[in-house]
Image (tube, rainbow, N blue to C red; front, top):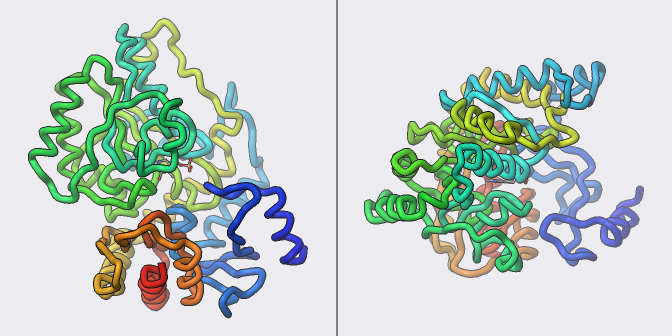
Length: 426
Ligand SMILES: *Cc1c(COP(=O)(O)O)cnc(C)c1O
């Protein structure tokens, strides 16, 4: 298909993320991708290829078109790409679940596989509400979270996204009313810890669970906080009989420097959500893990089953690639690679502080963020990055990057130059 034909059809028929219909901004057409490079159907700003600074929204940690992941997909394709999970099971899903239990914090033992992060959060909420219902406490049906979070775009996840800064303000009167405390400060402050304890204590009778993104709040604002708050949440939840859910969909698989962000606090949640990098960015898949206590509680109820079962649950193709992606990650010194990227981002973004309009520059693990003091001109900022030969997707007041772990130093330097250029242009 010719590029102009494709774009005309795209504009006429295809909805893009968070976009209007018909689309207002013209997307770039990607013909293929390999390593950390996206090959464009037609050059943009003189570049036939762009270095990917986004890992396709945190997911493509090993880069694109990876021979090991390709082989895993091909091998599984020849056996079966899908089979229903009701009444049937298969090695890829079983191996994946066992592997996830092995690498996540100790008490997580049971795995519910689903098709996207939002669904994994829906399942987490359902598990928590049903747990209390089964124990004869149906009034414990609300969730508590801190402001500035993002947990997905379906209804339950939307209700715990930041009610103002998030993308779902329109629905504030429609969504279930959850409980919010203020955004976590970056550094540990005892007064904020006390605020968390007080909120949990005061609302314990109506709270099913506390749900947070540990250490890094992603799409809600790219904010970092002291892992000590996770210990405060764990202690307060235990003290007052509230479950604790960690949404590690963005932070899982090494992004923050530890395999899971929870590891930085030495804290285990009762329920954990994984997604995004789970399949190395190849296929849509997510997982909700829970402890035996949660599973046993649900099983003791009047309705002892978890009534959830996506058509593509445990998809063999996605499971096989997820297993290969995890093996590939753990077979190398991934922590050293993330450290290397962290150093490169620190060095490359240091100069951004002096750009007019820049409010803050922060780096953690393989995440680099430049925050402006104004709403960004997304088109101008994106174009500035493309001019540097880099793909970035700025939003709100943020230009940020979370590159694939395989990004070499020279490419990383170019990504940093593009972040600076986008911040200056936006
Ligand atoms: C992306 C994300 C989700 C939603 O995942 P989808 O696969 O897009 O539905 C949920 N929680 C967090 C923390 C995320 O970053």
